[in-house]
Structure formats: C-alpha cells, structure tokens
Length: 130
Image (cartoon, rainbow, N blue to C red; front, side, top):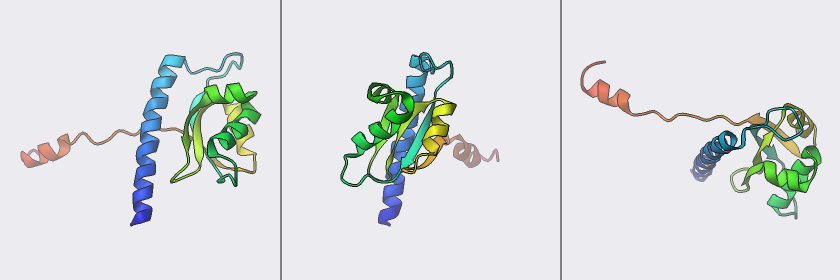
C-alpha cells in the first residue's frame, strides 16, 4: 500500500514536470544555442547518489554531456529525489546517447504528456446514448 502511494505521488510529480517542461519548450523555442539540434525534454533515471546531495549529483552528471555546470543548470527542469532518483532536462539526441552510456544512468526516456479523461463518456453513458 505504501509503495502504491509513492508510485502515485511520483506519477503526479512527473505529470506536473511534463506540463512545466512543455510550457518551457514553447517559450524557449526548444533548441540549444550553437548545437543546431532541437532539444526535447527527457527523464533521466540514475542510481541514488551515496553521500552526495541529489541535486549536485544530477548537475554533475548532466554537466559532463552539455558542456559545463551552467549549461546543465539551464537544461535542468526538475529533480526527482523521493520515489525515484533522477531529473528531467532538455537534451539533444547526441546528449541522450552520451548520457545513456554513463554507468550511473539507468535509463533515459522521452517525456510524454498524458491527457486525463474528460469525464464526458460517463455522462453520455448515463443519458443512454451508449
């Protein structure tokens, strides 16, 4: 039961970060200056850092593929540190490939925006239309 709660909380947080990332992509144009490639929001799952603070670990991991700490801070969107360990960031296909090869990175997946059901199906069913 407790695990189900944490998974539910994680999914809720992920949905919020996806929405925030989508808005950020719309306003930022989606490309990384000088790269010539479009950056897309990805969720990066990593091993939990030992003694290091999660945020510092995420920035250090990302900095190695985006060109430094400042670029990593600009690309980062959200830190996941409770139900899962990882972060969301705007990444080019080349950066995704480089991050995926790192031993501390478990998985890199594209962010997806999910639509919740509108509830109109239940109303139509109650009216006898279905």
